[in-house]
Image (cartoon, rainbow, N blue to C red):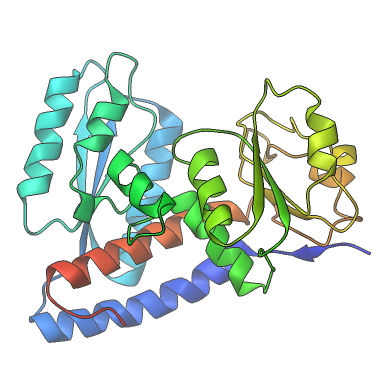
Length: 285
């Protein structure tokens, strides 16, 4: 019997409908002040351009504004910092998204950390990560925060379960592990160089694939009745996990596409709206 499909696309649509209602309420209370997300795209990576366009389209669907900032491939760190500084100072901008990755000559971490904490709606700063890890109020990194929303929506129990996160990136693997730990899972963080990785994955009640390599995690590594979350997306519509080898044995799984990806964008929209509500002195609903 196939596992439950953790349908991120369906939940994201429901979230967008709720967010659109909140936006209309905010506009009515503030005399038309519109929540605004600034998207910063550096360079000419076509995949990044697609991701930014998807986020701008989501803003439009729920009635928010997006401000496009596009910088050339040759942009230097200082130039990007200046652009971020202007957005930090702009009271009409409530959230800032710096699209990853940036060109190699740019110090990405320095630029991420230049984003003001109250506008860090994508959860990419060290400050935000630290507060989240300590259980304090912060905007969580959008993809793992979206995964947590999806698990909660489907009633997936986390407390007491053994979770294995395969991947250690600062905007996905590491915050994913901390969010699961904060919800009382016992968490193991692995990566592509972990020895005896199949044996470790087989011990997991919940597996998160976030390693960035197509079908790196094989289906036969995953235990019967585990919950399987695939946070990867690669050419051909495949993820980091060999889902075909586990769908018939797992308790639940995220499809690729249509699982984690839509939740990332919906969570970014939700956190931008929350930031706008805070900036405009309107209590979040």
